Length: 189
Image 1 (cartoon, one colour):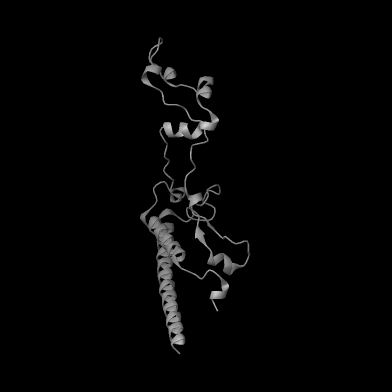
Image 2 (cartoon, rainbow, N blue to C red):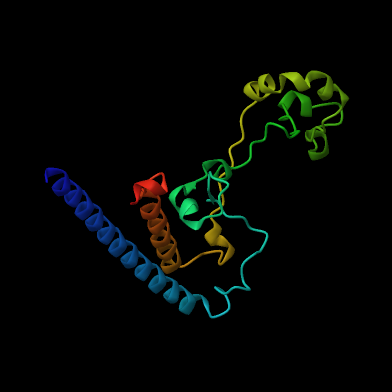
């Protein structure tokens, strides 16, 4: 009898959590769509439509399933954010120009802008060994790129309502990701 009481208590806790999260998601979606409607009003009818975005853009957050099973329940149970695709690509494999030193740019012809640009040549290729690329990357200053916010493809200066809509939709994704679902279908009963 005590086992049934604890099972009932766990089930009621899960139902309570489910209802609470469902209401939070509904509230955030409601806010997000209201802000999106306001942004459409401010930016005009053609700015936020299916024809306005750049189709070459890629998402910065990817969801994938670990299993090969095509079952929707399995895919939803194992959903996770893939941080590998979210990071900007590194410059390790690319050939980059070396910074110009002041003594290199000063020469017989004076200090002109054409002399200040140093092109990579054969001397640079001798210095860099392809097997020691990590040593070169560690010695040279690292370049960091700021990841461009996808909201800028709709407007150069997006309105506050569009930013609020984006943050509401991100909160919905965070809530969905935080849900701890059972790892196998046998746990569901």
